[in-house]
Image (cartoon, rainbow, N blue to C red; front, top):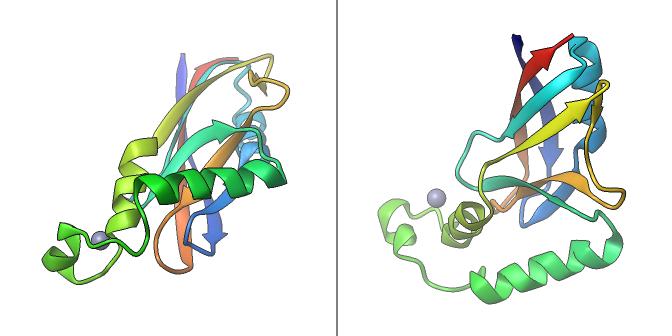
Length: 140
Ligand code: ZN
């Protein structure tokens, strides 16, 4: 069994920007040379998240609208009194979705549903350069 830690970099617009990173993750698995195992996809930071979704234009609107009902951007958050950075909504949304997922791969390919992509969610209040850590564990 081997462990390979890799990084991918993504530029985001913030404000619940959703980016399909499936291709980037798949390329790193190919580059690792590992055939069977799991990849942990983790975003460092408490205002972004990683999950899977069907990456299509409707859901790219529906998911932000649903999150706006749960953690409205304009609401008052105790967090604002802590730092004065006014991104309480981003932190709450990121905590709900979570910073990482684990995806299996077989034959060097991600095991995903036909309509399932790996997505990075950036909830912060402006553009960010995000680093995503991939820890690939498997065999050749
Ligand atoms: Zn904050």
